[in-house]
Image 1 (cartoon, rainbow, N blue to C red):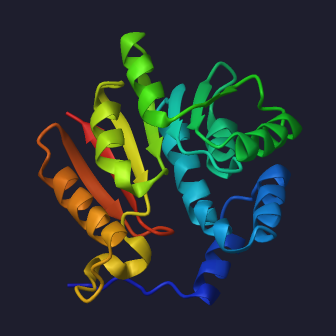
Image 2 (image 1 turned 180 degrees about the vertical axis):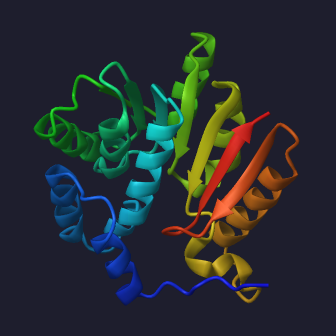
Image 3 (image 1 turned 90 degrees about the horizontal axis):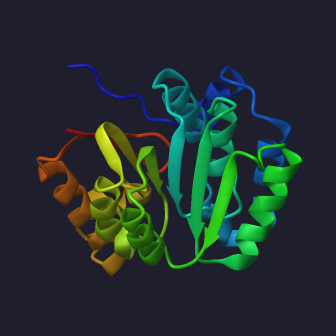
Length: 218
């Protein structure tokens, strides 16, 4: 059986140099995040930007819900792939970073596609269910303690064949190191098992960035 290639920094740079060209504002967000110190880890990777782009372009996706926006790289990456009549709703509880993201959306001329809600995500998800909102794709990249709750509530917000994509499921590789037993790592392990056993979806973990789980609702 063939083995997977270990992606080091040099190979990742080569891949990025031979893949889609990022939008100038995507590059600007990445540069801005570099100035934030360790918190920059909250942004998705360039390879994840490209993968989300292709999924949206090839799946006729028009309505996206994002749970966890940070400074806007993932939302902007997805919005740029949407058709002109596409819409993205971005949920985040941090007013400061959401304002930063909104400024980037405006610079990229995507403000008409993207709506933001600053509020605890679980409350927003409950409200969306009450409003009978349905999305083609839900992207989850927020506090890991609530991943299971976000996933379960997202199932009510997508139809059959709708997609739920979750970031950080490989957790820097620590999910396979049994010596690491902190609460966040345990939470990610348990979440991955929960999703894999869930009969309401089929799922695939892709080792891109910090690991993406892609679920299709059955």
